[in-house]
Structures are given as structure tokens and as C-alpha cells.
Length: 219
Image (tube, rainbow, N blue to C red; front, side, top):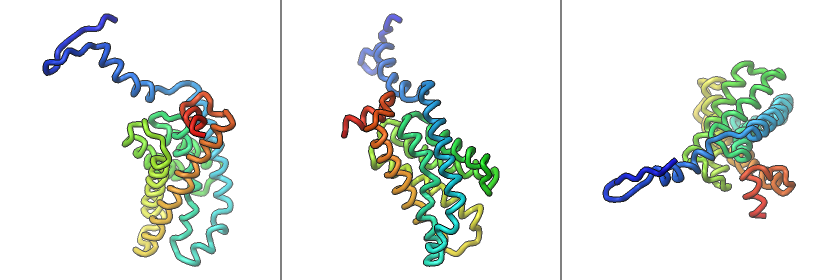
């Protein structure tokens, strides 16, 4: 297409220059087939991990809950990994929600005791991470962004759980539960996922993704 010049406050601009300015954002937003496939594989795999954790989390966290009611959520970041990890790998808008909800779907189909609310929880948790990546316009994938995304996912989980499952809980319990959930999300889902992506990049498994190339170059 022939560039069409026009003037904006004395500056000559062409349609070609506008197109080239927008193209990086368009490229970040466009999902490839490989993005969908890998995001789906990650969602299913983490969904299996979620279901396995469902079977043992009550006895595993009982000592923590006995020591301080609400402290048990310090381990719940395990349920937040899918969204952050999926987004860090494929680096596309919507990836955090897609992968987290898919993982929750697998978890639910395998028999999670929360039924359809498993999907609702997955959406809320994925949304928390998604909003952080959105704030950075899906252009910054550094460790501090991953940690913030994990923390936001943990906050979403805490608000959701305290509303649905612990309505009427004491202020002390709610505060401990929320703080521990945010910390767990930041460390396990945020930092943990970022480190996992770097480890996968070293193997060459992510060579078709910008996440793999940038992580490999940093090693």
C-alpha cells in the first residue's frame, strides 16, 4: 500500500509509519498455533498437579493451620502456577486466564471437591495474574513482573476464598490467610514459574518462543 502523508501539528506523518508503530503490539497479541498447543499442554499438565495437590493438602497443611489459623495458605501458591507459567512461556494476552482456567477444568473433571466453583476460582486466580501483565502491556517479562503477577493471583485467590468459603471469619484469620496467600503466590507461582521457564529454556524446549530465546541468551 502506498503511504499517504498527512500533517499532525506541523509534523508530516504517513500511514506506513503508523502501521510500523502498531505492529509490535499486534505481533504480541496474535496467537500462533504453537502458542495454543503449548499453552494447552501446560494447562493440562498443571491441572494434573493441582488434582494431586487436592488429595494431600489438608493433612499437609494441618500443622500450619494448628500453629496459626490462616497460615495454611502459605502453601496454596501451588494452585496458582498455571496462569503465571503459561503467560511467561507464550507471552500472549489472555494466556494467564486461559491456562489457569484450563488447569482448573482438568482438576474439576478429575473430581475436585469444589465442583463448578473450581472453574470460577481458576478464572479469578488467572485474572489476577493477567491484570499485572496487562499493566506492563505484555512487554515486560522480568522476574519482578512475574512475582507481582503471582502475588496478584494470590490476592485474587484470597478474596475469592474468604468470600465463598470463610465468610464471617475473624479479622485475624482473614488477614493471615490473605497475607500468606499473596506471599505464596509471589514466591511459588511468581518466582517459581520464572525460574522454571529459565530451566526449560536451557534444555531448548522453548526455542520457538521469545521467552526461551531471551532466557537462553541471559544464561
